[in-house]
Image 1 (cartoon, one colour):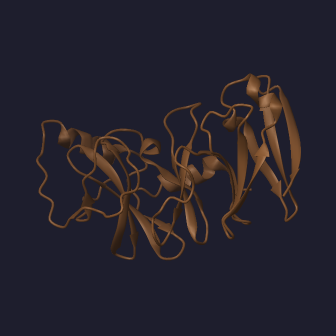
Image 2: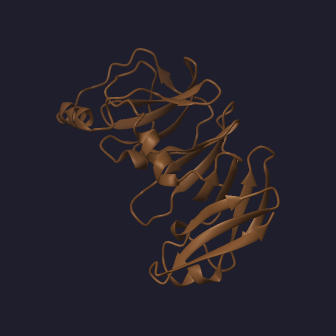
Length: 238
């Protein structure tokens, strides 16, 4: 079973933070939705502000910086890029730029900028994290079109990359009336299921659920409550 922390670490280790690329895209200071057309400057001439070189040097000193682009199945990749104010993730097939899938202020944590949560055959899960305890916001991105295939504001629960199944919540902070969604990315068929009632008495509801087994007919989750002192399992029919 693929774990979220392992995937996050693998992707962060593939970000290239020291290469100043020619395929730069200019976005705002915050992470924005996927744009329909990338704005690429093939001959960038950035203005250097007073602290720009210091920021770049800090990036070079980051232990995750001395690596290469992230490869995604199907000949796709994600490149790290930056200018005087912002850092970006550039989505490509071969050398062709498809889109800029994320951008944020230079110096923010890489998990804010985003990373790959799961790499499926036709899609991949792109994750943004904003601090310990907060929901991990996700997009299920179609590899060919770079379109987001699930509702905005959806949040991570877990995945099974072998069966290519995503378990997520359409509500970032769910209530008793909300449901968790199991999506088969091969068929794009999804079904909603009730959350275990015990999780609603404490914060970080989604972070306390793990997908531990899945078959053609059932799936099983494990969840914690009472400050992690109690662990239970629940099996659902697919």
